[in-house]
Image (tube, rainbow, N blue to C red; front, side, top):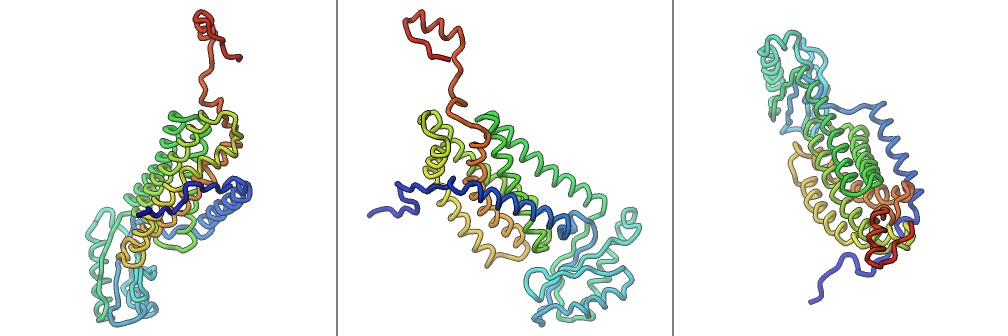
Length: 329
């Protein structure tokens, strides 16, 4: 029985033919993502902004009675609640600022949560409280700083590793590809206003790992081919390398997407944002390995000489002593 091959052995797609248009599109998307973050901002979860978050489901209603719910909570005197659909149309996330003095008296936050949940149950008997989370403002600020620091340090450490393993051009290419992937993923959260919390930071770190893995596979094949085909033009060599690793890339990405799509459709709402981030990351990570990480090597002047040891004067003298012809510098 002949095995099914998603990518034929003789595949020869000229990926780098459209490298300039794709780079322009990617740079525009990155700029748009940054613009969305600056203008619309991120819908930061309680993990990052502090406060009380109550998740509720109205089991006997198709949609959340937003007006009545806002009025019910507003009468308690804790300020204006932030209501947001959470998952299905009849599920809602209620966010409240912590009451003054809650840093010194943690019981104040618990009292506020109890009063709000009690008022919801009285005013809306079909309401089911799914969860209550509370994070202080000081802790949430520290979480946001450490989360962003983790993303930055991960990308820098990865670039240094690739720099040491390959050449500095490869480190720059990998860092740019990772920056591209992270920027577009964060831009999606700014566009959709899905909640951005610690789960999403974990998803982005997972995305960085996947994108790096795919990029290293391509870079390793490029390095091998630079040593093997020293006279081949660099664009042609990069195309050859990408095509040779295409089968592995397609199989890996499809395997992950099958699982992720099942989680998106059938999985719990609690991990929807996490799953959506990784799903988008699979697409942009695969794309960046081909159209970001590889073409940039042309503009950074990578050549076969990058991996050929330079012959020193001592090497030439030793070759002459052995009766060999030294290489011309």
